[in-house]
Structures are given as structure tokens and as C-alpha cells.
Length: 119
Length: 110
Image 1 (cartoon, chains in turn cyan, orange):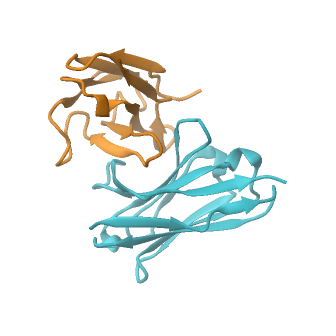
Image 2: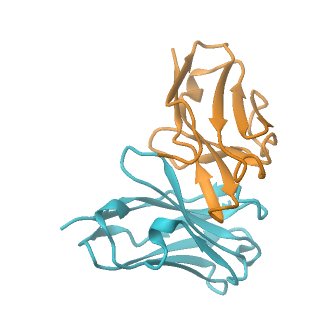
């Protein structure tokens, strides 16, 4: 069935970097925009970034601009989130999600990967 | 402080109808469609409503959405124990050029 599987989370010190991956299967990955959404412990959902299906456009929430980069490899059906200069407030479960049809409705979600930024 | 405002909690008894509100502004709900997500404990969110009032296949028709001006609401009729979850509204925000979520509403089935 349609599936998204995140990986790459872990414990990292403040100021360091981490790259998350999201492997897609059972749908035409190259036809859909993809999002990253995060959820800090005990908190609500926060949209992080969006990349268009062909990678031509990328959008970020203000708090990660200049530090995070969303990218994709359509030949590998994989979405990425490069996170640099990590801060304690970036600690969260990170979900990747498929955009339904370009209206920012996310109809398929991964199970999430946990990122903990701590010294 | 979330851009979209939801009540932090709601409750109802089995069989009842409950509504959850979501308030925004002209740059988000006022000019874009609203989505609703259900998050059961320990799981990833699930799309419940898109385009303000459309249900994805597989979502029971007990769930319905509406929008008026800069506000939206999610209604759940025939409340069931398995509806106990966190519910989030979301909309694209033209001024932020991204998606904004409400703070979430924790629904308790008494």
C-alpha cells in the first residue's frame, strides 16, 4: 500500500547537523509535492517545509529558513530534510507527508522519526 | 501561539454531536480552504477533511466540515469512543507563504 517511511533521527548536540530521509512506495512519487511537519513533545503540529513535485520550488516556515533544506531525489523515491545549526527547540518528531493535489492537504503520512537536540 | 485558534478541549458522550471551531484571518482561512486532521494517541495524523468540507475515501460521513469567512468548524455526529483524539485545523497562509495549523483540540468521549 501507499507508504512513507522516515529515517535518520537521533540525538544530536546543539549546533550540529542531521539529515532525515523519507522513502516513498506504491505511488508515483515524482507527481506529488511533499511536506515535512514536526511535533515537539506534548505540543501541536508545526509545518516545516514543502517541495514541489519537480523540486523547482521550496517553502519553509520562518523558524527554519537558512538552517534547513528540503530536497528530493525522484529517481530514488526519496525526500530529504537537511537540518543544520540545530537548536534545542528543533527537538520533535518529524513526519514526512504527501501533498494530495497541491492544496497543502496531506493525505499520506509517515510514522515519524524523532530528533532530539541536547548537549 | 498558533496562527489558527482552536479550543484546547472538547467533550461529549457517545451518540452526541460535537463541534470544534477554528478561527483565522483573511490571509489564511479567509482566502484558502481548510483541512482537518485527527491524531490518535501515539500515531501520525490522518487527513479527515480537505477543501473545507470534503472527506477522503474511508472517512465516515459522521465527520463534516464547514467554513464561513475566516472561521471553520468540524462536526462529529454519533460520537464514538474511538473518536477520542486530538484534532487540528490547517490552512495555507498567503502572507507566510506556508501552511499554518491550529493549536489542536483534545476531544474526550465521556
